[in-house]
Image 1: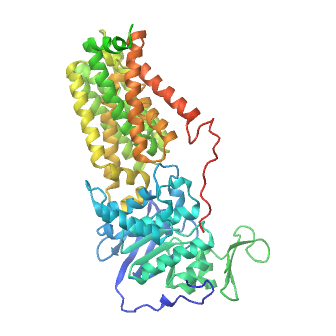
Image 2: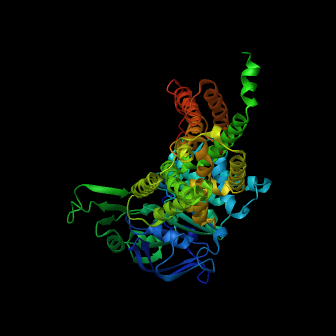
Image 3: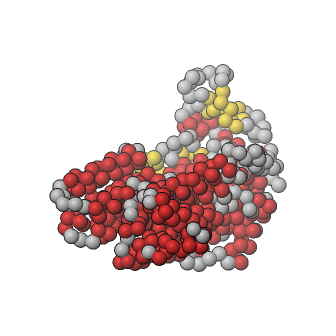
Length: 287
Length: 287
């Protein structure tokens, strides 16, 4: 649907008086006495798509875990869907990073997506017809209906992401927390998944996703949060192409070349501090 | 000897009847718990917990308390201590378990060496002697085994979700930490009911081998558990008859039959079989 080269997604124009889905206030958190995030504050409006960007180890996943209520902040406060984190777990779906999943695990696509219903089902209750219908519809949305009986390990990387997104959809959440939903998938899958997420946002659901794909963040998200142990900036997603912000987020080794759609180059931090003309890491390019 | 009396003759002995019932129950309970042990990678923990029961048994013997009780307290306490270490340790997890496991077992051996008189009871716990099980022990074993199976049956979908994707399960509101501790406590109880049958040293085989065999054969969680249970049941009966007729150690016979099944699955299995020529089906890239 949305062409990859369109300047800005139309849904960018948000209702300024929209309700707030997530508020993070001066939060510091981490693991084993090592802070991963320091003094982070941000707000996310209901029905918006927020891209969380930053280098590896910047605290992107930590932010998702805090919002999900899996990790408790050391200091500061979070409000998620009107309450403290964890109080509205049934309205949240979390998608783990692909490498956090054991792909040899003996479960089928249908079983994985059904797990999305467990939070709603509660203990002792078995999935019913309605649950199976929701699972089927979720699989339809991501185009994976025909794969229901396959073991997840037999799927390609893109198909695995589709199935996990279907699990999130099957939970019928108000808030999606997605850890790198489009990392390592081909362009078509990325477009399909983003179309689905855009549809969810239009239906009033809030989507917070970490990503390394700056072009995708700029083109398909409404808002972006730049994180590098702290919040560098939060603003409209097209700020992703702001050279100075990227430099601050990634440590001075990002270059956005002017031109249609922008072309983002992340320089190899260890070898070329000055001249970005040598060996570049092409982090991504516009399509 | 005709085949019927080959089967029925041993059943004329009370010790053989009790032994058969006990080893089948132990086999089934171990296979069910073992499915989680294999999928969560808890084999080493299982071994550690079973060794840690030894000091509990020796102390119970010295103070004249029921041996089961001493073993159970030691097993569950160790299992929970391991759970705690895993959540907040700085050392590598297997290192911590290794320290705990050898230390507690050494403590048991030390106490054991202070006992002056003949302690056949305690030695039976090291290598197992299911044919020596008393009726009251059998009743305790049946009750505890039923409790473990009932709990797992009731919360199996939550245990499955928490085992497969702890973060996703926690975000959807499941009490993942509680489930983890519960699983470890159930593992402790399972080990205690099993050591009389197969002994401290071989319990880990009862836990791991049938489920590992099943994982080689099928790709669905439910079927994996059922096949593990079937293998464990058949091995228990076969092993015990072998032990009866050839005058072999009962626990070792059961474990070796299970190991033979594992070997067969490894060589002949449809998924990983060394003889299988079928190429592994890998999904085409998502389009």
